[in-house]
Image 1 (cartoon, rainbow, N blue to C red):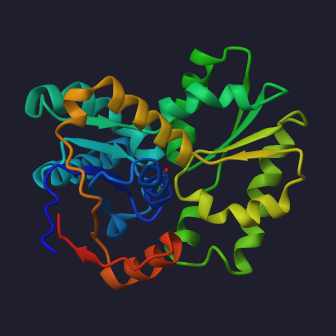
Image 2 (cartoon, rainbow, N blue to C red):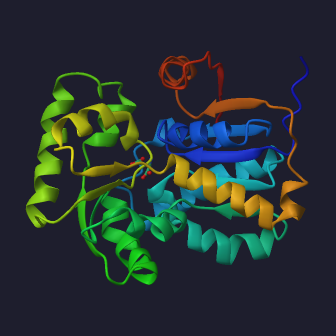
Length: 276
Ligand code: DGL
């Protein structure tokens, strides 16, 4: 079949994590065309400086624009925390006035306060996301009554990128960061996985926590927000082709990408390696 992926929705992450967002989006909007780009060769982004995350993210966004994507989702909290504002305020107006880039932090902050009964939320993310304090700031805008407790989990993305997240070694690090978070407040009843990789650790996270703590992943939140965005912006929606196609690109090893992505998406994924 001829693949016409011009005018796809671009979905970007540092690696595999954005697949958790892609999966939810593609379930909600199955007819749309998608191009997924994982910057696996340079992942994890979580410990990189602001400048580095901005530079890497912009390169990936520009690559997706060059493939004809009018809209790109930064399916990565670290990139959303460190690069989105610059891209939206500097790069788009100057170079790409007709393109749009959306992140994952704001749509999550808009709803997370409604989930917590005790109004006490734990946020788990990469060092970059946690240090940026983006969730503290954004959740406070929408839910000033909610107290937010943060914990960085720097070992989780490397476990996932190396395919070790289902192994026994992962249990140690799951316990370590959850204990550190829960020590901060006994009233936390909601834990937000504010890194798109973390839902891959969900079975271990849920097994460790007591059942009165809700664990929230971002996939459905971001997908609902995108549906809403496309309804409010028919001029963007009209530009996107709807032939129910998706293609996958990685800056890393294509075979490793195919192996992990196929297991996670429960269908065969054939990615193409690109050089930025
Ligand atoms: N999946 C990206 C996020 O949501 C993260 C990770 C990384 O490369 O450290 O933050």
